[in-house]
Image 1 (cartoon, rainbow, N blue to C red):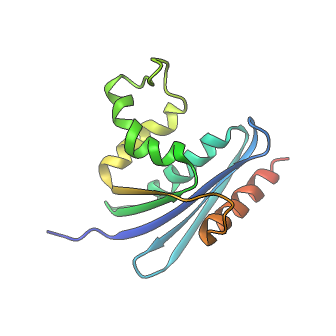
Image 2 (tube, rainbow, N blue to C red):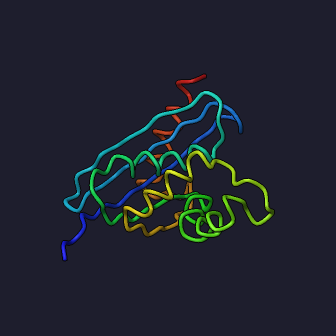
Amino acid sequence: MTKLPTFILFTDGACLGNPGPGGWAYILRDGDGNETVGSGGESDTTNQRMEVIAVLRALESLGEPSAVEVHADSQYVTKGLTEWMDGWISKGWKNAAKKPVANQDLWKPLSKLREKHQLTTNWVKGHAGHPENERCDTIASAEAEKLL
């Protein structure tokens, strides 16, 4: 059995207003400690979209199946990936209130990437001094500010 490449992923999203201009960022660290940083933004978005896009873009950047430890300060992301997604799928992308799941255009491709990669999630408290989370927040905020 081949061992999967391993990565640690740190993500964050920011929004100036909600909705408003937003940014996302990730730091993807491989098993040797090498880092890839990705970021971007949208002019009219929400914080939750930016949080999810950060994870989506990072996982899309991985060419081969990998084991990825996701660190995010968004419970929407961590619980979405581990607790809610299976229910959404089984209910035809409806939430507990039987309404369409928000941000399906992002969650659906993430569901495919979740099948490809072995994901574990870790929620980190935002704005609490976690070094990589703070870096992602700074980058994501800068991306949002570019759109003002």
